[in-house]
Length: 325
Image (cartoon, rainbow, N blue to C red; front, side, top):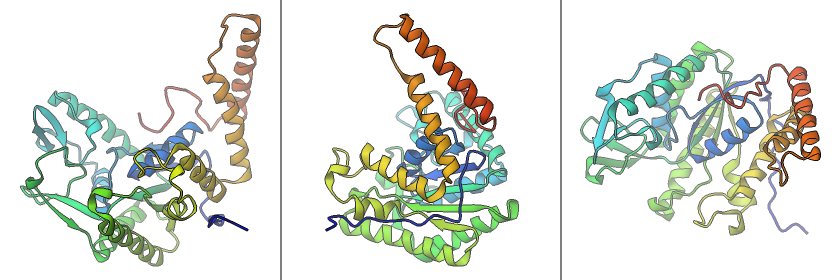
């Protein structure tokens, strides 16, 4: 007797290997999968605007990158002595205006160069609720703890998401006709929105993605991260202490399913080989400098050099783990 509703996702038409050029946008799930992909030395640009939650903020980021429209001081706002961009996560913010702008610009320039060379976009929608800056009418990527009365909050409709993303996909196809977009819905519940409101929000995202799959059957795909977390891993032992975010065990489980869905046997073997080398590189000896440790390090360096020669398409430089830093 099975005591779980195990989800067996079929092998996808999308095949990801270490030559696939990827860009990841969206909420925390994009970060989690992105970090795993970086660990195993895949080629990717991860969240060049930082974590974004709603479909319109993600589409705005992609539009800006496609247009290569750089940022200036006019794009910054300040609150309590901290400078922010309303399109970016707080990781780009700074008490120094020039530093804030440099953080944004350096990252933007690299991503703008990558977007036209990208083979696969992994997009994670987190919420259909958006915050509109009343002063300009722009939907923001992050409120940066500005007073709530400076925003108008509302939920996007299914039709609005479909219309916006149909334009984005069409624009991406004009640059890369065979572009592939892999959508997920974040399993992280937006509890502050309310229990029922969170369900409505996630439903909007699911329905919009389903329609986009029908409109662009050769370009749009879906990975059931949400379903795996909510149905398969429904026990709270798979959550962090906040009972909202997936635990490391849950992330590892979803990653394994991701690999079975999108990686060939050859790619999986490369990952396994690299993992052994990476663990050896990360090893911290109890007694450094001993003959045993020196032999261990010599063997590890030999395995690393052999790996580099065997797979020249994979960068093993620890200072260059992704397409952008």
